[in-house]
Length: 127
Image (cartoon, rainbow, N blue to C red):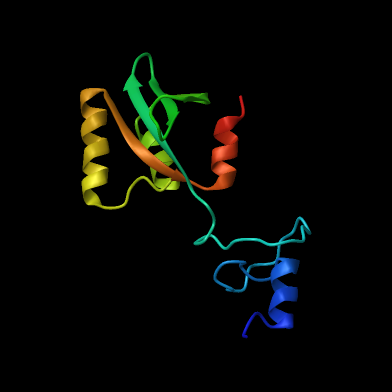
């Protein structure tokens, strides 16, 4: 008894609505059909970013187990780039997070957990 309406099923399978929460999605320019998630429901990947000052700001990424390194590494000239990267990756949830990262920059090393989208995670997995 009960179930999904046929029109909702058609929209979900066509990628017009989120397959989890049924909110309408923006049109996809790549013309992919199939179930899609909205930004809020998309599966997230949690990684740890470690940074330190050594001839530039070196950033290394680890899986959430803190043992498995990801192949991509970055070196930035200024610490502002680290803050921008953390903002885009969802690492700044409140003022305390920002202050902790700024403290790490002041002492020359630090780390933060990031919550990445599947696309961001895929870019880190590539060399």
